Length: 100
Image 1 (spheres, one colour):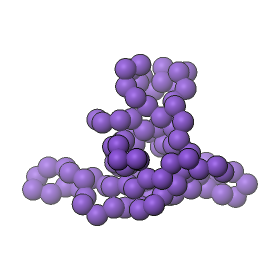
Image 2: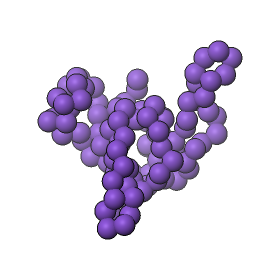
Image 3: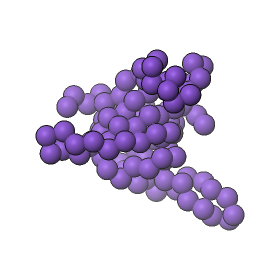
C-alpha cells in the first residue's frame, strides 16, 4: 500500500456530563491512504456536496466512528467505518469529513 497521510487519532470520552475528545491520542503516527470521496458514495451516504469528505484506507485497527483524526493540522471526523481483509491483511476504510 502506498501511504500519503500521517495521522493522530483521538477518542470521545464522557466527562463532566458532556462528550469531549481525550487529550491523549489513541493512535500517534498512524499512516493511511487518503483520497476524495467518490460522488456515488456521497449520494449513497447522503453527504452534501458542500461537505469536504474523503476516504481513508489504513491498517490501523483501533479506530471508531466519531474519532477525531488530525491530518496536517486539520481536524477530520470518522463518519463511516468498514473492515476488510486483503490477502490476510486487515484494513479499515473510513469515510472522514472536515469539522463536524
